[in-house]
Length: 177
Image (cartoon, rainbow, N blue to C red; front, side, top):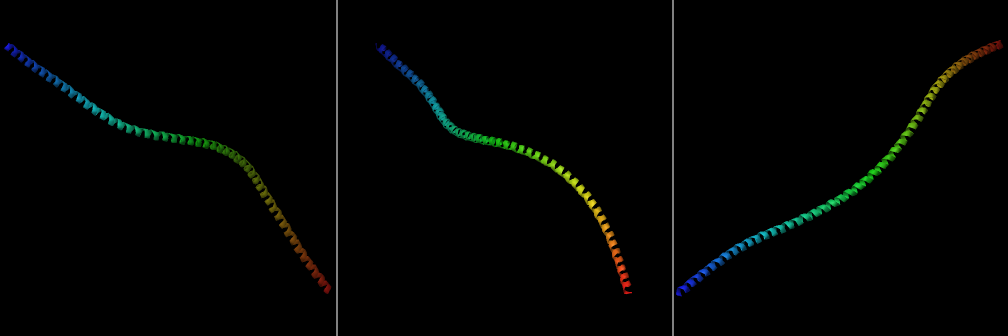
């Protein structure tokens, strides 16, 4: 029995050793698993921190983009208002242009009419100038004839006066005798 107890004790000791080795092995596996989980947890924490940082960065970018979009919308509104004002101005200028074009056409008609009247007046003036030239030529001829006639009459008067003087001299000479 002694050997049985010793053998039992040895078997129990060996069983306890096997149990301890098994527990150590299990604990080693658990530690590896815990270490793996810790590694996964660390990686996930890093990923969460990275995502948090990228979310903050993206929030800043989104805020900047929102501000930029707001600026672009304001610019678009301003451009739309400016475009509408320019369209109104173009429309106003086109209507003014049409009015001025019509006025120019009427002025052209008036100018053409005045040119025709001026041409008629010029032709009339030319005819009057020609008539005046002819009249001046006739006047000059008449004045020349009148001057010639006056010269002849003056010559006749001079001869008559000379004759009267001679008659008076003769009468005075006859009366003195």
